[in-house]
Image 1 (cartoon, rainbow, N blue to C red):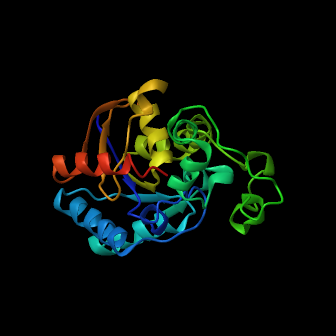
Image 2: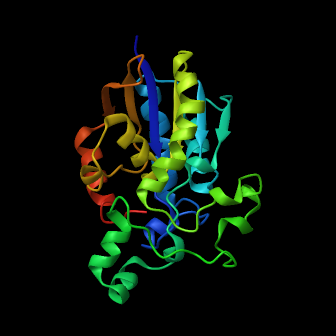
Length: 247
């Protein structure tokens, strides 16, 4: 038996455009990002793929992307769940900084390690920093010990997998089709788990904004196939573009 899972990275955000580290900072979509979200909705309709349930992070850019895609597809009645476990990777004290200026200050090799390595964390936020998630009401019901002050991709895998196993997998086992609208790194974390990507190879994997990625999974939740909807070359070009604009 085959189970369908749809992954969608949010459309281009304002801080993607401005080349800033975004992480858990709540920023919206650019006009291009809004169009990417609508196009994602159309692609799913054209492929005859309709999700039964939608999951997003608690960040605006993912929520806006989901809403725009569902409106475009005519699926505004779908149940939606939100979880901080699907949030983007927390970039710690880098959040809000210009990526090029940060590279000029700390050196390109150090910034590359912070951005792309599997297990190197950026500098952490102090708990009294206003950017620390403990000051955001959306996380008031989260154990303070679980709220990150910085994260590497390995940390994102660790906090995302409980949601996968406890929430998404039971839906797939019930023959439902979940749509997960999240972020470059939270989706990379899930793809790493699904495709058993090595720690070395995951560094080079990039997920394009606004293009649905569809998995067919077997009963053991192992991938039978996966593909991006729409033009394959366009998806590859978009992934190449985000490799220069990660976060």
